[in-house]
Image 1 (tube, rainbow, N blue to C red):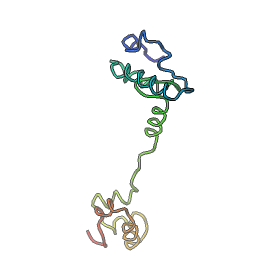
Image 2: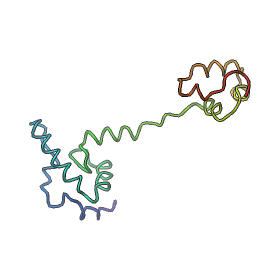
Image 3: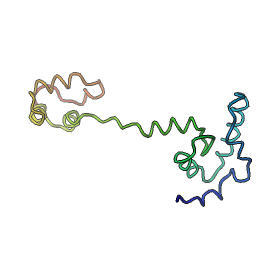
Image 4: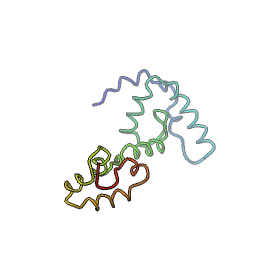
Length: 133
């Protein structure tokens, strides 16, 4: 079971819990309520612990200064795989020559040169051209 002792220090302790769970029926009222809940969170000394807890187990409401929709977006961004460069690009950027990379991949240096020519500009600048280097 997770340590929940941080809750005794929470700024929301003693605040009506309904503030943190607005009813979506009245949009202007919801915005006001969310703003009020986030204001409580901004002054909270245990905001990070609350947000971590909310990511793990709270599907609704405002917690840790974020709404359920904001937490959902943040979670999706955290769970996206980090875009990795292909190994052959990393080898070229690391100083391997095109013939060395070609030998590792079992293709010709000309093939590696063609691959390198298709790289986006930010990668192409760091990739050596031709068969030397």
